Amino acid sequence: MNARWLVFLSMVVVALSGCALPAPVYVYGLRPEYPTAMLDISGTPKAAFVEVDTLQPTLRWGSFPDVDARKDDRDGRLNRIHDVRYDLRILVAENDHPTEVVYARSELPEPSHKVETPLLPAAKYFWTVRARFTLDGVTRVTPWARILGSGSSGVVVPSRYYFGLKTPAR
Image 1 (cartoon, rainbow, N blue to C red):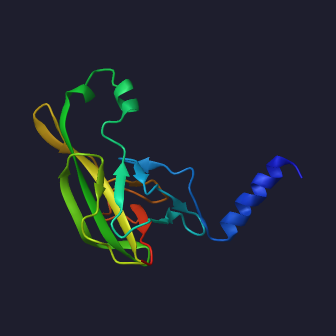
Image 2: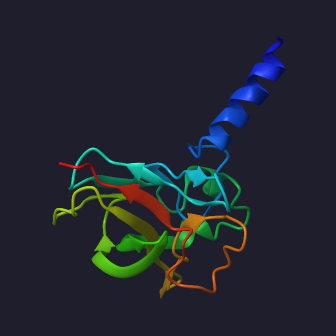
Image 3: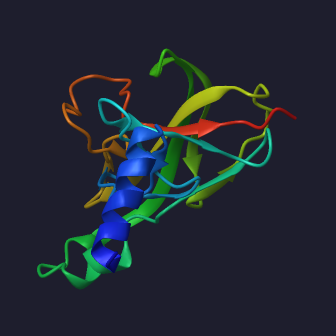
């Protein structure tokens, strides 16, 4: 069997087994670094729940604006951005949909945050983040970050395309 067939067969086996595949995942907004964004393609594409190693994980995401965006900034608008802070939300997942916000922090100075209150063991959550910044003296915010999946418009908040995480049993 040639290498192409082996790759194809392994993709079919993974898809049929209901596993979440990590790539390609397209993200709208800030890109999560830990836990990474994954897409569950076992049925209708949706955010997969990535297991973290503790009940108080340190969530990390890309900074705003990122290096690539600054390189493409022809008119220098991004260089006028100041006082970047981040807002974070963690929501309970019920039936693969986000429900209530159980943890929220605003005005975080860095693109990472250690959850201060332990989450429940063996539980599923959604999380999302956005940047808050000043541009030309006006405070602005980016949209809440999410995976771009089929039907993932920005109209519905909270979105079932936020990033999924699952806590360990203990």
